[in-house]
Image 1: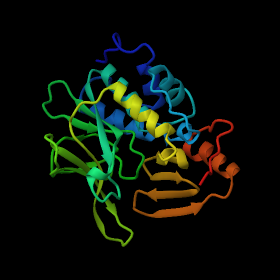
Image 2: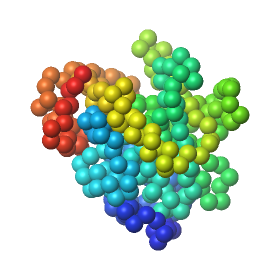
Image 3: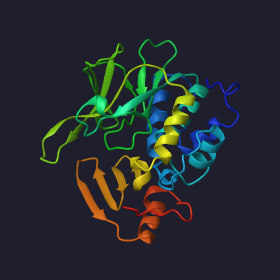
Length: 284
């Protein structure tokens, strides 16, 4: 059963589970981990509206509850995965923060900094740890956690992923999450998503990284809007003025938004987000 007696007083497990519409068991087992992970992915949108205004969002549990749970808002990786961490710990899981390098489109793993937050989850009585991540704002994101097992294909709620280990200069093993995707040339293949080691990172580490990503004018999240919503039928992404709709069968539709009013209406109706007054949405 869930242990809600010694957790952060700013976090409320019942409200969180209601927000993601999880009505299953509250216990530390694989079925609960997978179900809560998928429900979170489909229940809370990914968005960077705070960073778009050059404000690093708060990672305080009470503020996360106010924004992502009680408000019509989403967040980016540090917010999502901190919220999931709080929930999983309240349910009885052991959770470790990991820092990853996003390597989509990168020439080398080393060319990207560690700016992404992921989670390593341990289930009581199970020697197999799991990679969990509800904050990766891409069509190649995990929908359900996957075992930390190399060179094995996993099918998570219709998506295909695998973890591989690659050589590098450091003393720790380097893992890369790959997603199976269709390329523009209509050829399918494995695409690197992000790379990580199992070195534990702590809350103060992500306070620094969060501030950098949320305020640095060179950060991709301070330059243009980036919002996504995942359902069983489609992945919806608004990046700048381009809206991309990817359906479960691989069909992709794209269109350009023309004005702020259209963008604000789209956020309300399709993403479930009420943008703060004064936020410029179509900045580039």
